[in-house]
Image (cartoon, rainbow, N blue to C red):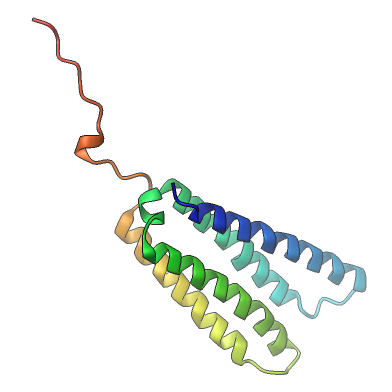
Length: 138
C-alpha cells in the first residue's frame, strides 16, 4: 500500500493544529484581521487534504500513480503559498503570492478531478482477482 494517504492525513493534522493555535491567538488578541487566511488554512490545509487522503485510502490504484504524487505536491504548495499570500494581501503588502497560490490550488483541484474521473472510487478489481466459484461434485 502506498504512503500517500498518510502524507495527506499527516499534512491535514498539522494544518489543523496550526489553524487551531492561530484561531486561539486571534481570539485572545481580539484581532481577527487575518481570519480569511486562517479560514483558508483550515479549508484547504485541513479539510481538502483530509478528503484527498480519504480518496487515496479508498482508491489505492489511484494513489500509486505519479499523478497522485504530483497532486500531493501541488496541494501542499497551494497551502504554503496561498495562506501567507492572503495574509500579505490583507495587510496590503502584495497580492502576488495569493494570486500564485490561488492558481496552484486550482491546478491541484483540476488534477484531482482528472484522477477521480480516470480511476473512479474504490479498489479496482480485475477478473483474475475474483474468487473462483466452487463447482458441485458430480
